[in-house]
Length: 526
Image (cartoon, rainbow, N blue to C red; front, side):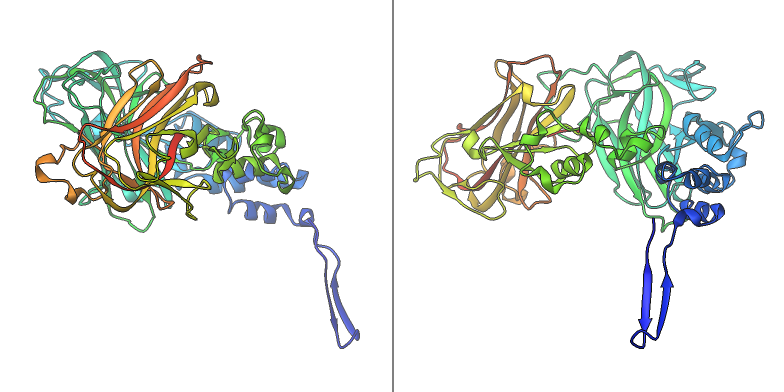
């Protein structure tokens, strides 16, 4: 870390020269002050620069800057720590009860952002103190002294609030409903409506089935993308995401509200043990989310990043000489899809997880009548990922099918497939929804339906679907439209199977046209 500066004045009559600037020669407290303006992750990285940097990065002055104000009050008086770094790590790994046990508090390990869990005592729960409907129990695995067990209600409503000023600024947060099930019943008929947002705003809305073994009946619609199911946590509880909120840090007195409500069905339901609402800071970077503090010193090494790259990745990147490290190759594959198999597929990595993703080009698919000029025409457009894409002129039989070998997908990974297209004077798709399906060949798979016409008001009133019946296209950041065809979880135990995706509309018999079709995208869900 050296630099040389020289200046000649008056044609050589005077020269000011600073031969070198050695950062290691700076006082340790000066280096510590500089590091304190970074982050816990950066402090760990800088500790490997040199001995003087390690001493500065490990100092109390640095780690106290990462601790929240009044942190001393958050640690029980019975505990003592040899350093501020140890104090910091304790707050990351051991959530502490605050406000008389009504909240739990901890720090997100890599960024130092503040996180909370609101206990049931800190929330509004309809009828929670009515013994006929709920009862308070004490269980060893719960974070709080008492938690409520749902016996039976027909009106399910939980609400929580937290002041925005308590959250870390410029931080993305996600809120989760945390619970267990014990002889659960009644939650398999109707999804719970979830919402997170500032009081007085619409917020982030979604739905979820709280029964982890929910199976759709013939009378129920296939869940759309926003509907979710519980996920198992490492602590043995279940969680569903309520929604997300980005705290810009410009509000001091606003309140964030989180709700979970199911009152439409009217049926009785029970069998939940409810721990609370967790509000977690989200670290959007791969290094932040996947590498702990103990691993950060190796986060930049080629061996670490090569382990995240797929097999035979050399064949997938056009030229490796332009990349200085394996991390650069990974980030290139994460942000710049490359054409493979002679341009018949597009390939990239899901940036946060390293999972493999693909787009199948129209040349890789079966499209009914695609080579008949009366019905389709092949065109070149700059914004397309492939050399040529088909434009639909007019057909009465609309059928697109694609297949990909399951062994090409990442194992133990949840995938969703999307039909990707543009509209150019579209017509005929407003009368009948297209039937969509995704599944392993020989199975029924995941089914749904969508209107490919993007303007909902063009759908005749008598054909308007109910909210959960049929999808509509959504705009992508690349300027195309997409509709979700279905989803598939790759267990990784099938080597010879094929995943098939289809889009079909043949029942109406009406003529339709005006689509420019880019392909079928198969994305890993992080």
